[in-house]
Image 1 (tube, one colour):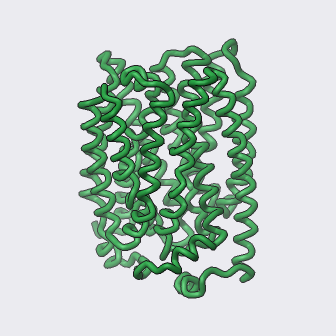
Image 2 (cartoon, rainbow, N blue to C red):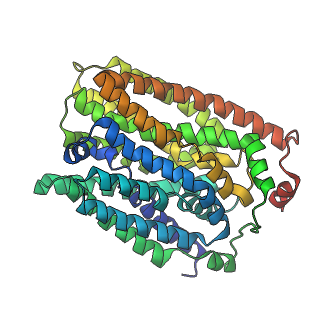
Length: 426
């Protein structure tokens, strides 16, 4: 393929499909919460502990993984990661009754979908287009990610309904989809050497220095980026607790709740390109886009407090989809705020590794939410909703901080480390 546009789209489609498939099993509870818990025979806390273990392993591996992504070919890292996840998916399918083996699989997936995978993926996507246009690539990536994730949930739902099969059938189906993703990445992703040969510019890679860590830890933009990543991701992931909410509080069928969850979590990704357009063309700032969007999202999430077990089930089911439809475009461009945080690409992988050391979103929140549900029953959902509303407030305040920081950096009132500033200028 000699046409740059064809290479761009083939790479982006392959990455998007892979990005949806690789996380099907780690986050299978998003759509199959009740079915998974019943088949394994565990409590809410135990089920969410699996995700917490996954998150802690991911976080501990991300710092060295970030340095690996800064030094090695992103294509190889991505292929090894999705291939390992495929193997772990099939292992879980064979041993789905065992909570202990499942826990081990989730821990191992913390390495296969963490370590160098995430910074390598972000580095690859960021390099697909010119500087300043990353938001568009991320929006398109999440569009195809959403298609993949939607298929990866609707096909298992169809298999369960058509055959009456239990939870393992879901896992087998997801394993086949992840295997296809491995093949696509092997066939269509270019190596960094090939990308450089056709004119793609990667910043020169240098040995890691202690000063790099000092810069990452002392640069205000690091913490702005961290807050955006943590709390935007919180809204995107923890809105998934509306899946068991509809079953426990509203009394709908688990399979019907799974269908709604698939729409909420993955089909909403089809709106991802809207996020790229709004951030880059309308607001011309990801931070400004976050500021206004999460005011609206916070109001909508707070509106769920109005409902109870006597409310109209159809109305509630539709209403819980609305915040997700607005969250997804925001989530799809959350990484592009790194430009307004003025973090150089030369240490981007290291920065991602550092901010991932504290696994708040997937490490602590699911465990806390599961404990609330076990302790307070349906009353725990009120605490979850309150947590999500507060998260929206934090995102809005952080967006204001980023806007102020960006203005100071552009005015020369706040300067990054001199050598990195020179590399950025070049």
